[in-house]
Image (cartoon, rainbow, N blue to C red; front, side, top):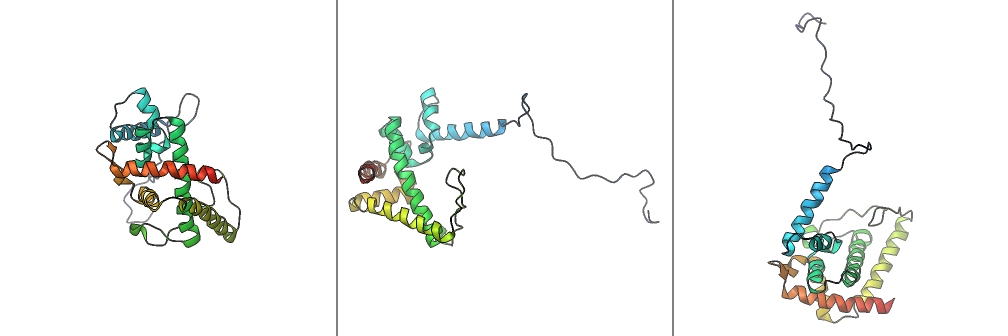
Length: 204
């Protein structure tokens, strides 16, 4: 201790603050109460945006992944049958994924005007984050291009009007839903998606 240090002999250095231990359930697992609250908040927001009341059926519908997208809400409102909604949503989601990966991995670009800068390519896991892709960069790029080309074949089998409607649904989805109901463009996009799904299924 130097002469200029006036803290005294009994001074104890302060230890850095320790983050509080996470709360745990009776079983010893870390509590996910905060995550549950956030999930319920998101679901309630979907229900309000959809224009419905909080009922058992609306809660069940709102948990579907399609309800996070305006076109999915259009399908839920106009179709309602879970199997059919899921069929159409699967086609739309997989097509969007192929378009995104083609630009991100093969071209290294974004299609969106607001994101025209070079994009960071997705990691080597699939969309669910469960499968590691150990292919080389060239093989991955080739696979992405092949998948994109297959979807291009399907999309080009549609009329120009349907292609425009689906592209708008992918790039400017907010125009499909307004004031808790589908817009004219929303109806048009859903009709185009139905025809698109038939083309895809016939081509498999």
